[in-house]
Length: 159
Image 1 (tube, rainbow, N blue to C red):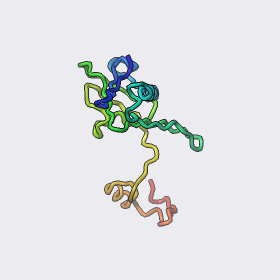
Image 2 (image 1 turned 45 degrees about the horizontal axis):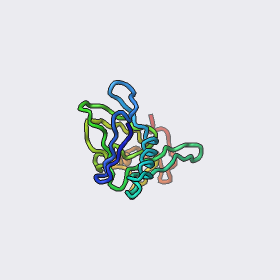
Image 3 (image 1 turned 60 degrees about the vertical axis):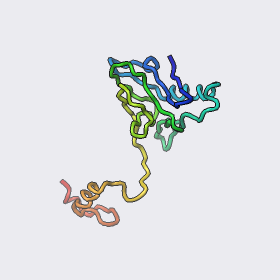
Image 4 (image 1 turned 135 degrees about the horizontal axis):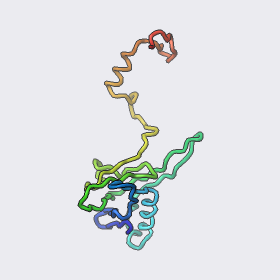
């Protein structure tokens, strides 16, 4: 059974049968297939007049390092896994994504434990160094083995 999208509530329902059983109560959602199925719904008669369900960036390579694809649920769509009455876990594979995001309301809480495989990768820091105040204070408290040009002055202070 495939996914379904309610064009009124913008809820994307994922039945347990859509998931791949890994072992016991652990299932896997192939997010690449999921986004393809969402695109197919968007092209259907029901989805054609609705806002896009997601953004997608394909994987890309920089200096020999391949970065994963990204799938982001957008436009107020929410994801709900089938409530079977029993607790089960869903591991997301195939992309970095926001499908597991309860705080932003993307994932509707049911009896499913989401397992995200996102990689932090490159992050943009809008101000400061990106360190917390505690991390900054610990770093500043290090022995002065580096001058203000980040040149190692001595290795004697290191164990």
